[in-house]
Image (tube, rainbow, N blue to C red; front, side, top):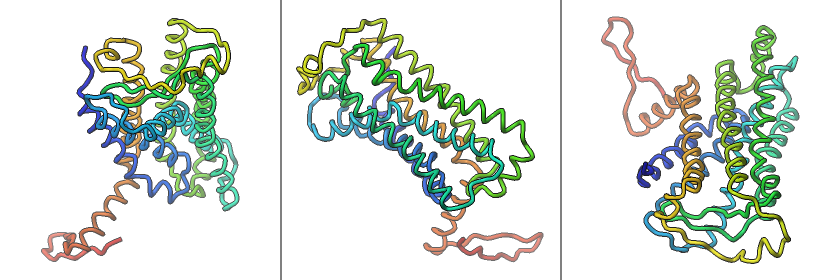
Length: 328
């Protein structure tokens, strides 16, 4: 079965980037750091892979080495970034579900933001550093896909790279299950806390649970799949730093006819880039049509309408009189 056309991926990944950008402002305004990080990492991944699929469509030329280095580092970070954002979301939901009062002071909110940044940004940075230890060469360029990071499969690789999403996803799963249990056990106390929670309603709380649970259902199975598959393909013994990085400056250029006929490689590249699009579409499905989203769309529409000279009209009963609704 042939993969979907590269142009289709370019279009959908750009749409995914836009879907992450649209709700960003009002989540940032509400101090929803974890969801903002989720949108940043997912949107950045979609935009990057959209650019790569266009620039390297039908070619594998090493045309932008500095950009390729940056792109592959972001790919490495994304290995754990989205699961880490899901962990941040689940931690916040867990604290709300098990607390007797909501965070009400600016100090509490700043502390929560710092903790989310340490997890949602700190873990991806650590992943970039640890992956360098087991990187076999600078990067590879795959026709139609673009640059991708390269690994040498040793026992250390599983510890420093492949295990991270599974570990983070498992911790996130614990928080998620505990949160759901506490949410349904203490409905009355939860409703009381929601009154004082800035930027978090009951509906948004449930959607965040659904988003993080969906992400976990993807992270743990896919992470386990990569661990098992790479172990079955053969593991090389770790010899030394010098041996692992002896050909680090090399850039391998792989035509599509080669990597598309390698089931594991085609599956790995496909899972990586299509999972980013899936995350963007799933996020927008949960938050792009919610009440607060429609309110923001309405405000934007009314603001644009007032600036270009249009008026919105509201009818009152059977009267034919109309009234202009001012911009919110």
